[in-house]
Structures are given as C-alpha cells and as structure tokens.
Image 1: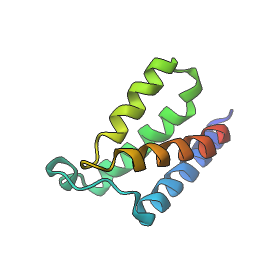
Image 2: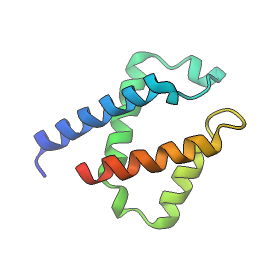
Image 3: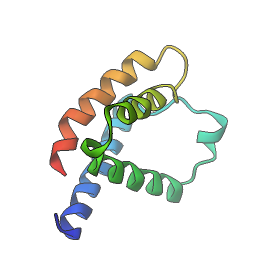
Image 4: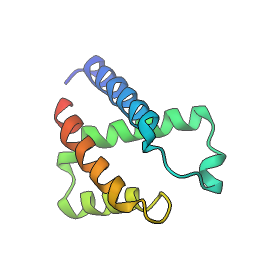
Amino acid sequence: MTDDTREINAAMRAKALSRWEGEGGALIPTPAAETIDESELRILARLGAALLDHWDELSRSSQDRIVHRAKTLGGPGDHAHVKEELARFLRVHRDEG
C-alpha cells in the first residue's frame, strides 16, 4: 500500500469517526476529555487510523485488551453500546486498509 493510499484511508476513517461521534457515539465527557483540544483530537484520529491499519497483525489478546479499554473509557452503562459500535466500526473499516 502506498503512502497516498494510507493517507486517503486515514482521512476516510477520520471522517467516519467524526460521523460516528456526530450520531451520538462520542465519549461521555470526563475531566481529561474536556481538556483535549482540536490538534490533540487530530493526533488521536491519526493514531486510531494507524492502529486500524495494523489491526489484523495484532494478537487476539491485544485486540481484546484494546477493545475492552476503548469501551470502558465512556461512562457507566455505556459499555454494551460502545462494544457493539466498536465491533460494527471494525467490521466496516478494517478491510479498507
């Protein structure tokens, strides 16, 4: 895969993440999340896209730990919904890379 293709895929993933957040998928604000500025969000989006590019190379154990951590970042009672959204997102987007 070329660098241009990776950048396009990363941009598509960032757009999908933004759309997901706009649909109500945003994390419940926490003191740490409230202090994240736009440049940090862009960095997080790039890290997320890079992780997704290499998702299938990770061990199942690593994937499980990452998904578990991601679903527990929100507020209480949010975990099942986030787990479903994460699974759907990974199914749709990990094969694009």
